Length: 87
Image (cartoon, rainbow, N blue to C red; front, side, top):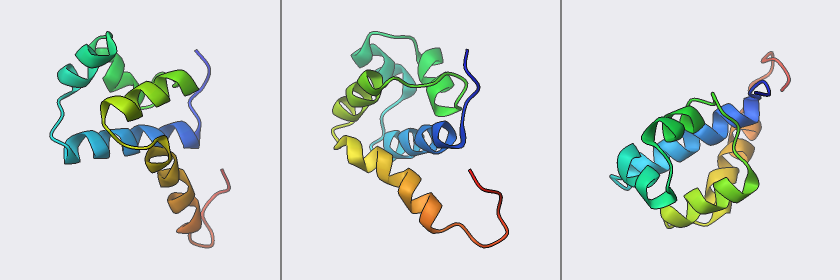
């Protein structure tokens, strides 16, 4: 496995946040995608990297535009305070 990046971590957090806002369990999301809930956990915790295809599937299953997930990365970068390490 390739080492998770800062972006992977933020995307995972974004997926988890959206999933929880919509009251969707990991099990339900996984079933809709045809994968295990453990795989959802790995995505959310950035233990496994997401392909663009899988990101699109997750966005569709959560009924959000993929930009909603990706925008979390931009928002985090814009809110970065001076002195934080570069990503």
